[in-house]
Image 1 (tube, rainbow, N blue to C red):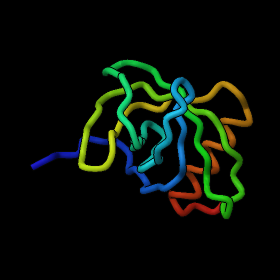
Image 2: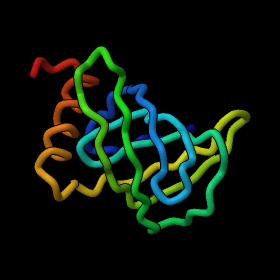
Image 3: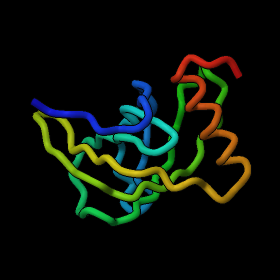
Image 4: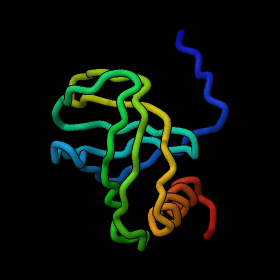
Length: 113
């Protein structure tokens, strides 16, 4: 049985993502202030401790602009449909990206902004 050792609950999410280096599309699957999981339509060559940059493209209905986020890879997994990557969120340097990250976290956590 798998044990979850996360310190913070991750909110289930659904936003489009694009890896900046390769243009590989996928989806943001869960998110917390410490980490996230992205599922890609095609596998990419990443290893534990790599840092990947991707763009999050939220649904139009939540009025959050697209923004960039970095992830330090902790694990990768294959399943029947997706290549998934999980890891630690690296906080963006730009104020607009920080604000967008806060908004999307609050949106999926069900917190009113």
